[in-house]
Length: 187
Image 1: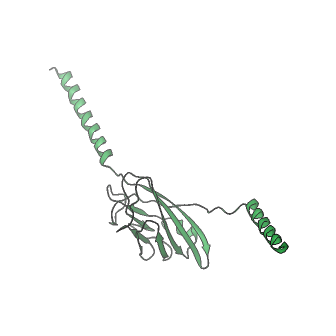
Image 2 (image 1 turned 135 degrees about the vertical axis):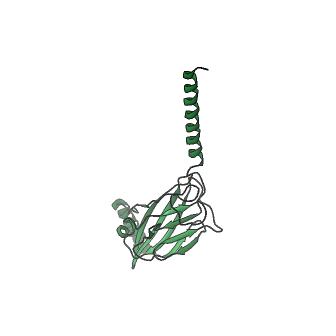
Image 3 (image 1 turned 45 degrees about the vertical axis):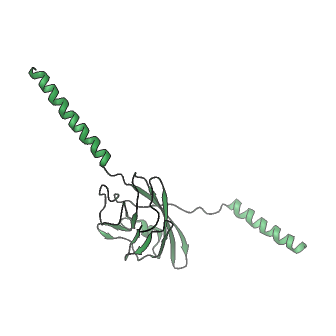
């Protein structure tokens, strides 16, 4: 074999090794991902919050730590009355919340779960970085962030407003109420 062919073969072998390595890292890479939205309802003394967490990865999620990153617990005030629709444990941890699946439903790829809590902090305060920064986990909470096979990268829920009734809907509802009252008086 002449020198030119050996050089080409060696270059081809190196290129194939690099390509194979990149493909393997893509296959064994993260696999977990999440995005979230948060909405609020003002109530006496604070706000009732609802977080919708969507699993955007390809692996099951089993834990969600809201208001926590490796820099610490980040919410401006201690939350209370945590809940969720997946049957996960609701653990208030100072000024953060850990939702951990021990006997509930896993959050499958492409699915969403709903998490709720009460806080005296305003929506602006609860979502200003680092306050709302959070991590979701494949298994239990292991204090990592962005660790392949274990945890998502840090993400913050996006604030969504709960739509208020339109003026036309309020007018229609009021008209129905007046009509019902009038019919009641006629009887």
